[in-house]
Image 1 (cartoon, one colour):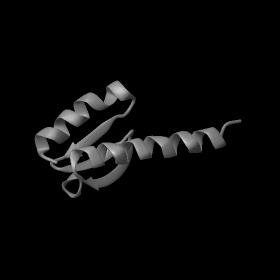
Image 2 (cartoon, helix red, strand yellow):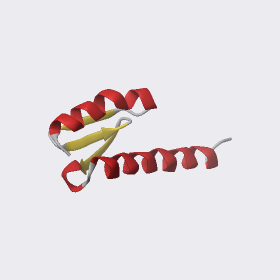
Image 3 (cartoon, rainbow, N blue to C red):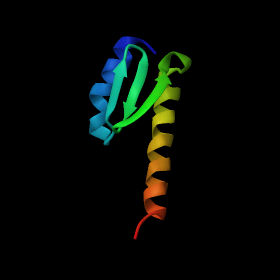
Image 4 (cartoon, rainbow, N blue to C red):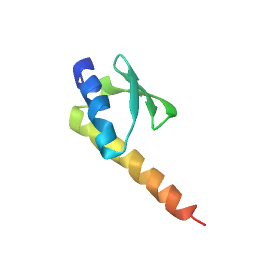
Length: 67
């Protein structure tokens, strides 16, 4: 992915309930959780799929942790 694509992804992510921060080509935060996701290792579609997997994992954890 290009830095322009990463910046655009960070712009549109809140529309889908996801907050991303980046430094160059590395995503440094996903929903305020520190991370180091090197986007150069992914095609744009693959990276979006990875983000949806993160959301799904968080949703499952919240469901099972529900009181």
